[in-house]
Length: 369
Image (tube, rainbow, N blue to C red; front, side, top):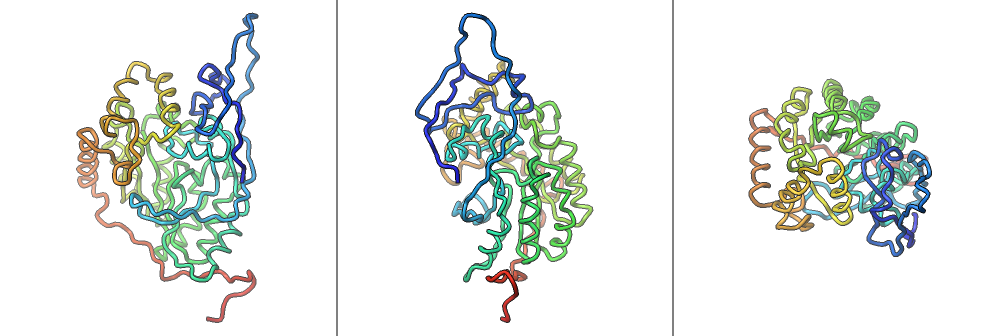
């Protein structure tokens, strides 16, 4: 794994030029909480700036020795997950996972969407961990931190190899994604669905293509996500929708419309998350607001803070996903009423764990017992 190292980091004065960061979400490479040095770009008086190179995606081999991440959070209904990638090329400016890139020595800003760690031995690691003595199956989740179907997956195919292991071992799987690329693996999902082993959620943040382009520039367009829901449902794969994150005065007016469109496409379960701004994400989000919505930035943040006890973010369990106070309560009521009216969540599918067949520990043949 890449080690954390002190490095020089740009300040707001060294924001990437718009023409260099076309197709990216963050405005700059904000300093991480681990950076010790800073640099600042200054005009030398000649009035000529170097022409910037477009920001390119760089892949780094992730040599982690394990693939299953375990958690004990009471806010989420699972205790294990797999992230084939760290960092995410989708570039969603609001992504709560951005600060995790600081652990790798990268900025949670533009680095998060351009410097991607890839776990090419993920399938082999997973086989080893599933074969461990005493392993007890429960739903394995993908897409809980970074998207398993982000653009680099088209060539890397790491996520598909992981799903193949889970299919072969009859291990239950849950996925959250923003990418139409998930439909590539319908052959695997439909086979798992017949045994009650898979459920997939598409995250739909907005139906406005222009807003989506600004806010999540390399994720699939809203119509493509709805089409992914439709194709999965038609293939017999249980599918749901996540309206996430809900952002005051940016997309909160779309809750009912998103739910209606997703239900019409075939989604039957639904959930939501209120905007979360942990650690460096506060600065990243404020920069984006100042650039794209300067006229409403102060009002947006006022409502965010109203739902977070007067702060930008409250990390405590029980609060961080939904918030509290009048605005958060209004969002909850609207979501529940719209979901109930449409028929969402009338029956929540419980994935099976009794079919699990652990892989052999020697990698050659199965156990006799």
